[in-house]
Image 1 (cartoon, rainbow, N blue to C red):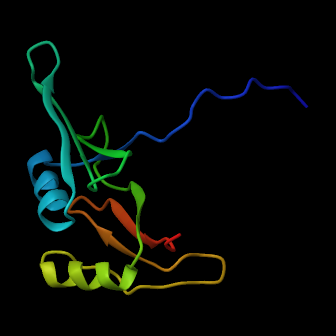
Image 2: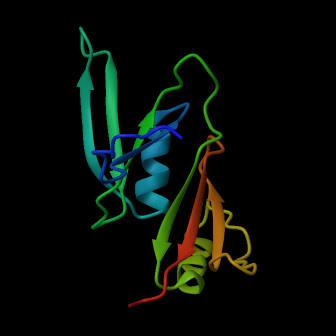
Length: 131
């Protein structure tokens, strides 16, 4: 067995989803899911690219919404946490334009449900007991 040097990585800071239209993705995550904008800036030689980050209020981890880099958008998955899956499911069901799956739980897994953004990226809403 090979010895390895301990990692210096201490946090997942940014998760990246590829999206077809950054403005449409921004509208979904802020208008439907209730996330806030953490970064929205132009970059590149002529400012032709855009770095866009959103996150649930109070979250350390951010979600970057990027145009596809040589591939198709969608296919990514993240999990977000709530103390009350039932209440969040009811809220998203009432918002319109969001089609959450039915909440579910299996032995060894938390209570959760899934939603998909317009590009097919999946957001798992997972219940974390208060405490």
